[in-house]
Length: 292
Image 1 (tube, helix red, strand yellow):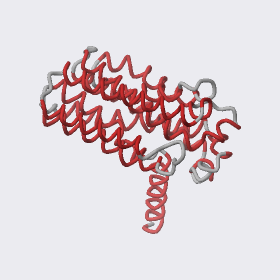
Image 2 (cartoon, one colour; image 1 turned 30 degrees about the vertical axis):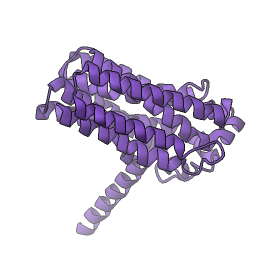
Image 3 (cartoon, rainbow, N blue to C red; image 1 turned 30 degrees about the horizontal axis):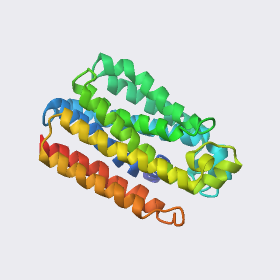
Image 4 (cartoon, rainbow, N blue to C red; image 1 turned 90 degrees about the vertical axis):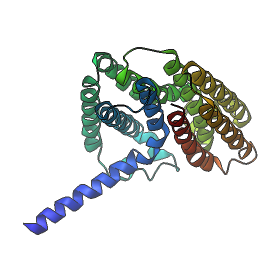
């Protein structure tokens, strides 16, 4: 009996590790701090424990839903791309049926969490799920897919705000656009790795459709907009010098990000994507927290 229990616990642990690898749980650092920013700003300080926990559960659930959906609908594409052939659904480490039910469970958890926030969050939860899933289809017909992804993550500060204050406010909307352009900018950079494959597979991305140099220019334009919207959001929220100092540091990081990448040398794309952008979200959250 004990041996059977240990075997099942090991199997459960192995599947949990595989799921975390599939949804890239470490990438939660991109959106979660922005959700907390919205929550803390709407609460005008430290929020109560219940909305904090509900928001955390909702954000983890919807992100897991979106990533698993992406992996499921892209399984054929991933199996052809040398960069993605080691993904768990392609290798068979996770089955399509398991992933389908994982998606269903994540969607249900997200809806229940939003239901317990307030009526508006519950009503918008279905749209959030649909929009998160829609992103995975966009690269099949439009190179604006990067901006759709940006809008998905841009919902994070809005979600945090609506969790405790169910109304659309100017600071939350400005943060939405700041995150939208931030994500679109670095996703364009990330997509340069697959430009040749995307072009051959007739998939749409800005690097595949327009080339690296134009892609880098558009990414730079996006990050200029990021700095402007984060600045305007801080002004609208009445934040002080600590936040604006943080925003200036973020702007400097974005400038550096574009300095380490060029059309002639894309070798440091992953460093720019993971390390630098992970710092940005946490830094802005800390700056916001200290400014309250």
